[in-house]
Image 1: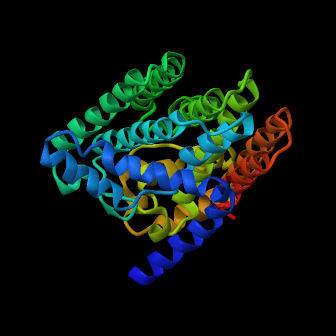
Image 2 (image 1 turned 180 degrees about the vertical axis):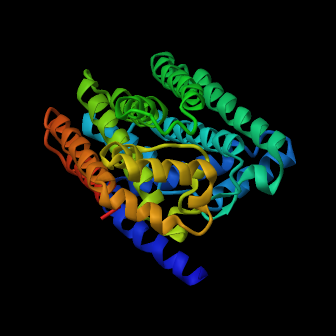
Length: 336
């Protein structure tokens, strides 16, 4: 099993490597910065938790997009490495808080902070990362960039509260779902791209902002699809976990809308009673496939990917622009 998990992750990593190749050296610098940035806290527990989090770093999508955006708008200047680390710290903080709210036990194939330690430590670690991130930007005097990051963080916090409103709502509408993921996920990816454009010396960042929004929407839709299509070893958490935690996503929203009344009522009853989680997840997969949930979500992700690539056409032609387009393709096709 462990070999299978490593093999799946290596294959995903190989595919992701294609669009990250142009900024590989800078990504290495970011990893060093991330390892050092929490080492001066003077609190051993902070260092222990941070070391645990760095064990499985993820794909570093936002860092790669920020660096590519910087070079596509000019060059990767010294503050970029710090800004990349800050964005990744904020992303990590949101994941830690999400895991506490969801009572999650596994993230990226290893125990969550709240599972390894407890909720209090997880909450304080998330708060530490938020405050450390803003401290770094403030010390660097990046007022304009700080405003971008603050706005994105506020949008994400509002979206977290919005998600509580939508908890386990089987009548959730597609428009509500799209607004939620735009504010909860796409906001930080958009901010990363805008920060790259600003720090790279770009005069206008409207195109890269649109790219970031569309890529962010595609990313979350495909991430939600993995809950229905993925392998737990690849996803890094139990398949079906989103719905178990009360998160109603696009594949199910579409399938419930399309299904005949009797089939819809039967599935809603199975979800509310918990029956669908008692060894019947294959029934759910059949339901979302049969009633168009999978195809609709794939189409929607593909549409956002194409919009992202169209936005890039407003940037000068460059290898970095092509890499950003490759990143959009990677995000869209990771469920294929």
